[in-house]
Each structure stands twice: as structure tokens, then as C-alpha cells.
Length: 235
Ligand code: ADP
Ligand code: ASP
Ligand code: MG
Image (cartoon, rainbow, N blue to C red; front, side, top):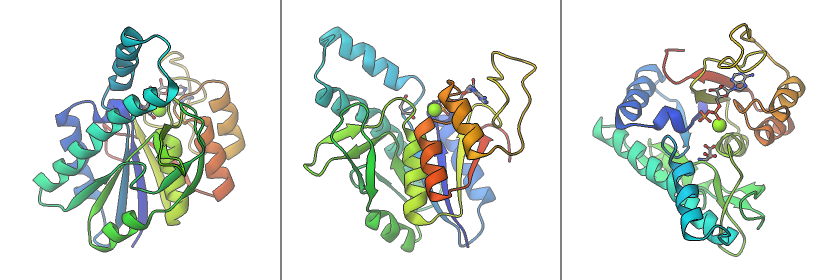
């Protein structure tokens, strides 16, 4: 039995077909007793679209309201992903960041995770459900919705993995691993079989968005093993 946290970025959940592809793959690849938590981002360019919309209404939108707006992107994808599992006969339940117990400070639009109280997540896993958590968002002590900054779903996944003592945190994205440089820009970039936390942190800090740098810091701190995989091909 393994506890696995699997994070799917925006491009991986951009369409209903992609969502069904993820569901089929997870049901095919899982071992009978695996406890599986998915962390998902907003579909495709949904977060960018919401930012464009916000700018049209108020170019200086209050950050609290911007977080309220942006957090809806992930809420769309978690409800759809949970329903995609249910359509295949697999019980599943979605949780917002708040419901998953992701507590943050009150720095709207760039909040930091302070603690994860994942009791609802654990209970749903005990009931045999696959759990889908909204990435990128949390809640303050005072009940305000926050977001973690662009690319923040990676950090959500690592924080949940740490709180669950997960065996592995798998980051599924649109490339099949971490390369020496962005493989979309540098065709000669080489895929790395293994990379240390510090080397990954350096790449992330230099702008390699394949892993958000705060997620790498947190993975290092809590000794979480991270694996980067393509969401399109079989592992
Ligand atoms: P997601 O939406 O799944 O979170 P991102 O767009 O945030 O995906 O990150 C994946 C992208 O990171 C890839 O499409 C790739 O172009 C880019 N990237 C930048 N640097 C690297 C690198 N060193 N190795 C792999 N991918 C990289
Ligand atoms: N949806 C958010 C973003 O586009 C968070 C994420 O994808 O990690 O930045
Ligand atoms: Mg990302």
C-alpha cells in the first residue's frame, strides 16, 4: 500500500478528454490498496483568462478579491475531476484548499502555507475514495481565501504529501521530466534521471517553471521525493 500525491497542471486537465485520460490511467496503474490524492490546477489558461477579466473590471483589483476570483479556477477542475472518477464507478470527492485544511498566512496573492490539517482528506481516503484537492489556494485563520502565487499548485501538492507522509509526490505536466534547460526553448537540453533538491532549486530560481521553487524548498525541508512525469505518456 502506498500513499501517492499526484499533481496535474493546467495543460494536463485542459479538456474533458484529458481529464478522462488521467482517470483511466490512474485506475489502470494503481495498486489495490493505494491511497491516492490528486492536486489539480485550473484548466488550461483559465487563470490567465480570469486575470484578464479582473483587469477589465478593475486594473487595481483588491488582492483579497483577486484571490477570491482566481481560486474559482481550481474549483472548476476539482469538481470535474471528481465527477470523471465517479463516471467510471470510482468513488471520489473534491476539496477546496480550505476543506483540505491548507492554512496560510494572509499575504493575498503570494500566501505561504503554515500548516495542513488534512483530516477530511484522510477520512475520505479511509472510506476508499480518491481525493481531489484544489491546488494554489488555502485559507487564513480568519477564514479568508488566499492563493499561493503563480505555479502554486506544485507547493500545494508537496505540502499535502508532507502532511500525509506520502511515499511519493508525482508532478504530471506537459514535459516528461526535468531537463538541463527548458526543452521547448533549447532542443539540445538533456533529461536528468536524478537531480538534487539544491540543483533543482537553482533551476527553479532561474525560472524553470517545471517545478515552482517554493515547492522544491518544501520538498527538501520535509524530505519529500518528487518525480516529474508527462501526463500524456505512460510512466
Ligand atoms: P504545469 O501547467 O503542468 O504546472 P508548467 O508550464 O508550470 O506546467 O511547467 C512545465 C513547463 O516548464 C514545460 O512546458 C517547459 O517548457 C518548462 N520548463 C522550463 N524549464 C524546464 C526544465 N529545466 N525542464 C523541464 N521543463 C522546463
Ligand atoms: N492555476 C495557477 C496558475 O496558473 C496555479 C498553478 O497552475 O499552479 O498559476
Ligand atoms: Mg506549473
